[in-house]
Length: 213
Image 1 (cartoon, rainbow, N blue to C red):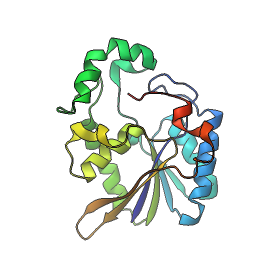
Image 2: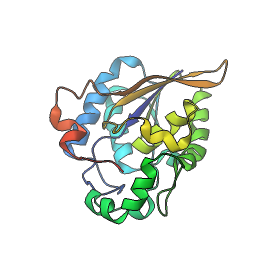
Image 3: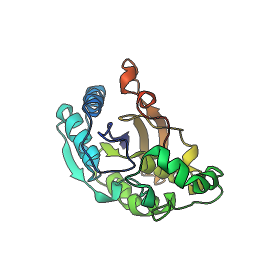
């Protein structure tokens, strides 16, 4: 069975992990995503409970008409003390943490928040639930930290190295994972596919933010 892992659309704030609505561009991204996957016969849509994920799922699902299941376990990695801050202030206040994180030697939790291993432990049961659901094609609207953390688990990587999986994931990009029941493994078939956004440079993250936490 196939899982289409989708990063939510652009939200209306650049502050770290605030629970806000999609921006106008985010709705456009979700619309393009819906059209892109309209022929895939998606049977169910899972999303986190955060507004940006729910609204992305609802907008894209107009083209799929699938059951929408909300799972809080698919929420973004907790950035702890960084949440609600702007990138410029984070770069200054947490410079020492960011420098240590970049070595990717230890699966460091964000100060007062989570590490990749924490995300894997809470989200993996939901992925196994999807794998055993009987659905053959599921869209999973979640978050960049969740997608990269789960891929590190599927690929047998050390969780500390999850950040090596893409400097940035585009909003409403598609990462395709296939579950093979015979050996109970997930294989990664494509990563950060945003061909549906490429004709619109204003919808790419490079036109919006210069860094990711």
